[in-house]
Image (tube, rainbow, N blue to C red; front, side, top):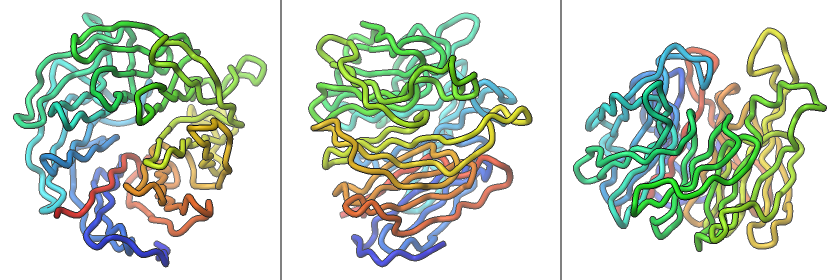
Length: 351
């Protein structure tokens, strides 16, 4: 681990999931010092911090492997106290399975969790009361594998991206129903603007990268107008994108996956990934920076000055100064197999 020279708020913590650890590691956000590691169920994917309850929620998606090539789907969410770094509860969503994406509505005490479909039901979103930690119901998304989920700040509209279905599912969170399907050729990560007017969706499905070049859809970020539920613009990228994150300062951060086809691996032959930065206001590209292998999750500090990019194949977290677009530090995350660093959560110090 390289130490960064930056100053930070004492007590702030970065939580990092290791998919094959399977662990959740805690680092001092000011010094990058490793604080502690908690062993959790296999295989953890994404993590979300609830500041009202001061709890971390972590999805455990498969028994082994990854989307479309796994050893069976798990059904659990793990709840962790980030201050004592202890597991509080394991919430079993069965018969729902394959939980992955997490979106938090603190005002209404709701956590939304995307789950994969089965023979008797489509994929959907499970709604959880964060005070009781119990499911309240589910919203169908009419697609087999909703993988990422995001909501508008008002807690009224949600967007589920579907890797292989040719649309983004738009749901009314108050009524609990699917209201629209926005046509895109498969989709990955997403983010919603601070005013809820636009959703930014990565497309196409990352697996399309392995298709012959002439058969691949153009890669980029589709800008969806929330009023019309339609794509109104596309921000082009050189390579396929998985994670998308919007900072508090309006910078749109996307992780480009760079790889070459390899008959021996479904994921392909890895090359260093790229963090690409756009202005959400102007929709112009600001710059880019090379990161590790297979960027999979991005988050940022509350002030929007520092980005954190987890790269699952190199099992590294790259800490980036967004003002200079330079790397401040790199965290090396322990793993027991190929998949390493995945979900990220920034945890401000308790006041």
